[in-house]
Length: 153
Image 1 (tube, helix red, strand yellow):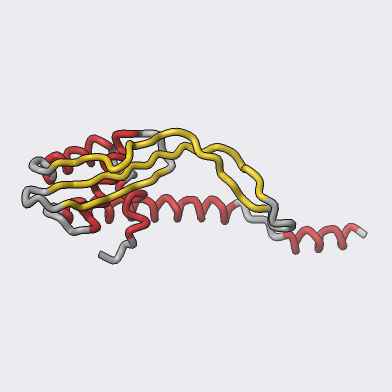
Image 2: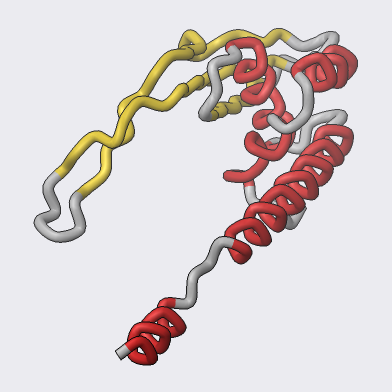
């Protein structure tokens, strides 16, 4: 596993909730899953600091969902997992928390979930490359602008 844990939820979240829960239903059919803290969805304020005076200011609101669960396996061992994502889908965030526990503790079936992580990371990488290409097309070389202004004199 060379993809860091901080990226697992983001990568798996690229897949549909139905696809994630279908895999979890097979893996966790004999497990008891209970929330440590009730799953939450809503809005969070994005707080940043001014670079000049280091004063805090709020950029705006973002959707935020979080979940923290405990899995009790057939052998009565408990494992915890959590997830937090900029989303408002409660079902998906609960599934991502279960995925986190399975992947972190490498419980039965973790390889199937790790395949979803790899697929999701490939999709995220492709999307980032597309964004970078679009950004490169809109780049302005200001040195060329000053050369044009001097020619007009």
